[in-house]
Image (tube, rainbow over all chains, first blue to last red; front, side):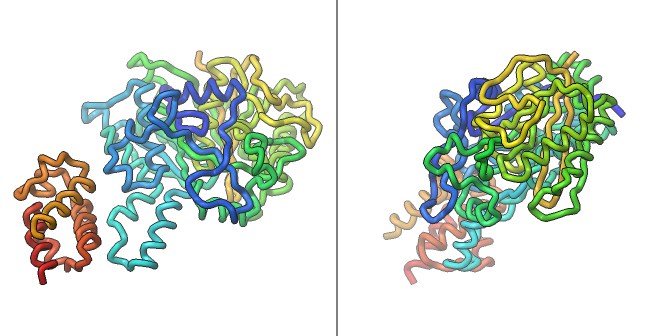
Length: 420
Length: 80
């Protein structure tokens, strides 16, 4: 199998539009949390979220007009808009804009979402009920479909290689990057744009996750304190939105064109819990097996891992189970591991989470610094693993592992190695 | 009254297709001159129905290919 490297990064996050602004704010300990705006929340138990900061594009705000024509924007849900922005940033960063037919057919797209166009489905349902089927827009279906992220990106950038998509709830972004890396390793493509996108901060999305008892409800008056993975006062996740995309490339292709190489994708592991539709397996065995498979694929041992970007959503059960699984993986080896949850700063981006967190892991390798777990005042368990409370930490990072676990019991793990 | 119909039609076309007002002339073809695709034309017809409170059957919709076609159809439909 061919070696696969990361040569471009793109991101729209609750901290900023853009990778470097999101990363520097993350390292500075900023949080993207605030009160929900844009719809009625007075009857919802959770009234906070992490919105993408919108504006005219200055100060790293997200200006939709920079990425898509206004007349096109109203045809799609925001997750498609975010995916287009992140993919365009990543292709620009990689300086890869295939013009020849030969270059276009070897460049593919694999972008997913966990839920897709929930907001548009909700709004169109009301139109159907109140005005009838003749008022349902011809753009209703294409503007909600999850794989239209990749559809739009391929059309806008002329990418004619494999055009694929992933839907695995909160593991989507990790699966997309892992699967895309395999397409390159197996020579189905030389370059892939891969990642995830989500935009479910809407009334029906918040109501639905509230009904699952998944969201934080105790911090409506202190939004920035709500996402607190591993802390004893955690009570659910805070919903984020946005997108992350990477450009993956065969090592030889990247070298031949003199591309900047951020990191190498060395490990990818998957597993299923076969336990419950929303609750994690209390043994943590699925999480353990996904990580073990990724480590085996990477040809390293668990103690080689320097940094884990945890799934760590700030829910009661999940955080500790993941930590237990990491301990099981390390066994009796001396522990010199840092593990943090960047969901403390950007919230849970659902289908985009794995992609955004993979990018943070890659930047930890680049800058030799691990991002913090905000609000970790009193860990609920004792651990010898460094949970990086409150502030980022400089340290050696040669291998970074990123976990994602999704509803349905779907687990994905990626391992990146620092560029040579 | 007829000028009013023409203005309302042109405003819808400008808004939905995101084109400059000076391009929205009577003989402008939605697809060839104004950059619309087949889905855009379906949505345009829906917008005309909504604005003028009329129903445009599919076989009539197929005959509306220019701005002028839309204006004359809607002038007749609203005069009836």
